Image 1 (cartoon, rainbow, N blue to C red):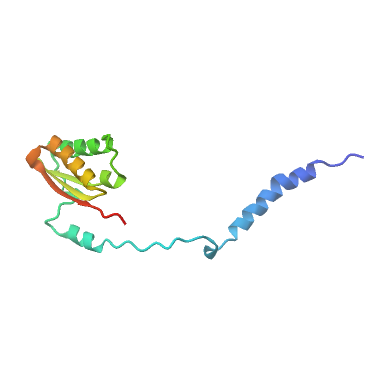
Image 2 (cartoon, one colour):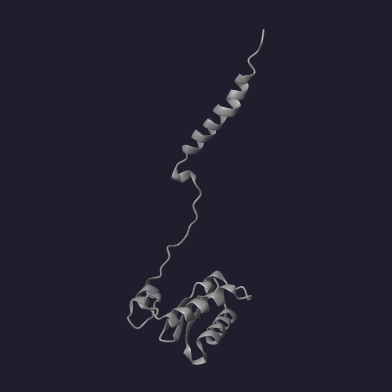
Length: 138
């Protein structure tokens, strides 16, 4: 008499994964770990950016020369060997009629100095308005 050896294989290969799948689907939101994250409050900065005197990326000059200056500064920051932080790489760079404004947070005075130096090298010494802010470490 031959025994059916495929039954145990069927249980292990089909039924076990299905049971595991269904048991994972029954978890509720309360079963999942949650991190207590405070809500971000950028109200003050958002209000500041609504002010017509504050430049935003939407104000970027449309001329090929203005776009080239902005692009070259961004490329220099991203590829610089100093290894700027992700925060520094995401600053706002706005060039209008040859004048470049740098806005946003950086992590240190060294990042701020390095970025301003790069921008002045590309845009020209008197063509950079430094509005970078050193972000306090929590």
